[in-house]
Image 1 (cartoon, rainbow, N blue to C red):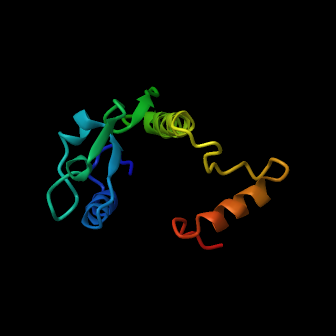
Image 2: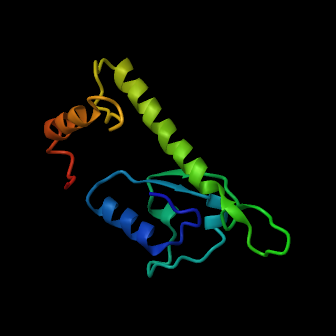
Image 3: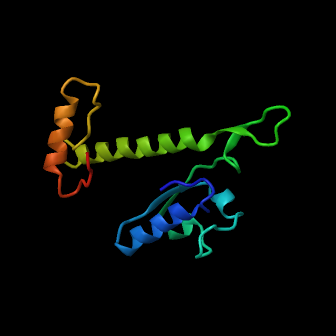
Length: 136
């Protein structure tokens, strides 16, 4: 899950519920920021306190990077690009490890814009229907 401040009750609840059913939780947050703000969840804890693995995005407090003359609030959140980079890096490294450990063809969804992509993806959904709970 992802929350820059870590105080959002939705992501905290998600982490709590995931842990209850034994899911390893990974949170992306700004630890320095999260440690300085009060939780908005009744537990009084922030998201990182419920995550098994915490990835610090080292973003700016408030998530805005760019100052604009005459405005108090900075704009241009760093978490969007940094979060996407972190998640995509995890994906790439996971696929590398699967290949290195002998998985000939890791189950990777193809772009629907590639010829045959839709068919490949439908087959993956069928092959992994016990793990993929996606409704069309």
